Length: 263
Image (cartoon, rainbow, N blue to C red; front, side, top):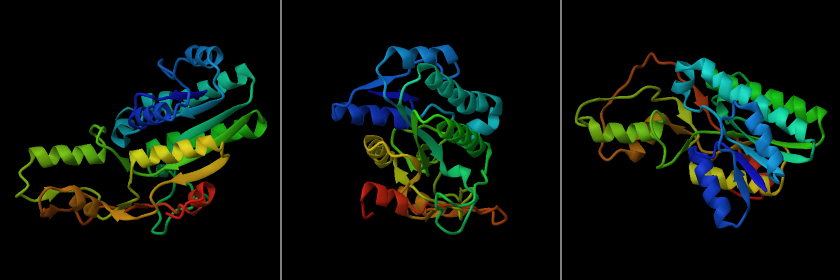
């Protein structure tokens, strides 16, 4: 049985739907990941042999505005999971949903072996959890660990402050005949629909892959071009040319090799 933390999030909901449609048994952790005892009781009471660990504060602005809570959820929550795994003392697989934000900005597509230098506090919380899990898995052979570094994803079910729903709200509420203020216009990201992200996660779980792997489209897109692609009208942009430009785009050759795809 697959156990899922963060099942109420965008990726969590989609994964649950997909597992249900494939008749794969799963158990949802419905408590607070910061509750150490609740995590243990959940793992102990169900026949869970694999965990998809999604529980996290994700939106970069949310993390920056409440950094203490972000550390409690993103880092302490992972520690609680590690403690529970240690107590149940059985062989278990773990997929940890990490992020492209752990990498240092690079104009070239990022490989899993490239420089790690989180570009924000969100990326730092995820990198700390990566290190904790990697250290534990080296010392405890009962855990098979897969770290998926997920790049930018979007979905119709997302809510602000994520980029995609925030843009849709702005299209509805702003006068689009006026200059459209856009931050980070010339920074680039690797965008992939959340449905496809979840397909990749489930595929990795099914084969019990062990290691670090990028989950993305493998295509680089300027923020301004992404906005143009979803805008209902042609826009005139108001851009601050002094803004720092950064790039987070994926090399997905390893993912394609693992899953035997040619995308």
